[in-house]
Image (cartoon, rainbow, N blue to C red; front, side, top):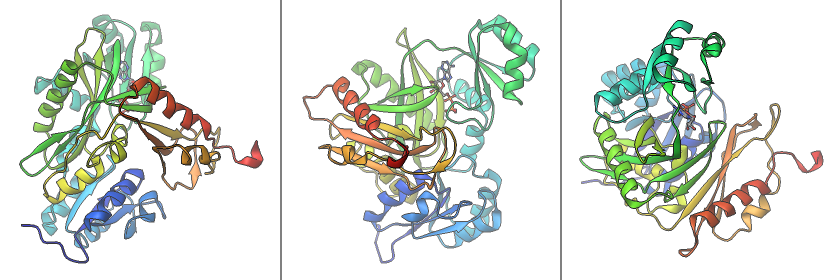
Length: 390
Ligand code: ADP
């Protein structure tokens, strides 16, 4: 039986970006406090959390201190150091969820794809690529175009290089600069994601999200996805199989392709709340962040039901070079009925950096197309140019 006291339980979080910030926002009503560990002073989460330990993600003495001040640990960044977390868990007895071993699986895209295939989860065809000869062989095998991906360190499409023919092999391998994998170019009808939660002896999945990327960066999320029920059912089933192979409790973001043939292929797993689930804050009964808090602490999960059709759009800094963060035109979002603004509190805008997002909740008779259009208009009404720069 859970008894709440004051102060409530403390969650130690490795990473203090926007995910940590939204985690702190969701934790507060439950009486749960956050301490975040992040190398950037005044990181986005620190402005909402109880405290921040300013240290690198892999600084073991700092992780130790975090554990000693917390009842449970989690991470919101995949750069967290698996070995350091494992040792801290063993030494302090403070539980870490998801298990640090999931990081190993996620770090390396080749290892991740092999594990998924071993679990009989359909994935795009792929080959290991260590040099240009491997890449030419992969093109012979899989055809062109294909996607060359850095095995580690890539995010928001950085580290991915589309390759049109064998003529581009040398250049592509040089651009990726390190161990890589080649993947068949998926002719997808849609990209989908399922936010899935592993609790204490229970699991939950949110309605399938449709994700819209441009230049490989997520721009908009549409819930529910504009896909038929049978396909959504299959997406949920695939997510539950993935969840089974994950160690430890928490929210997971599972990205998929829906091919033009109606097949579902797994793309990537994130062992943490995910950008494609930000819509759940206003659009679902209990958000992906609330679920993560509940799951990590071993508390019962909340309901994942949709409150109504919902669209989120990322506010990416449209600056050419780093500049102090300033968003103009926010009144348009603030005056939108059923519109919600999230500003992550980052002090510097950098090209295409995620600075915030906007969510719009639809009326029950509003189509997803109309709602998506409304979300895009809101996003496009704001700008990172300050008024005096215009
Ligand atoms: P990251 O780890 O940087 O997010 P992903 O591998 O998830 O990179 O790819 C980012 C985006 O690039 C995907 O959401 C998709 O739009 C596109 N993409 C990735 N792999 C493929 C592929 N095999 N075929 C077609 N598009 C792809």
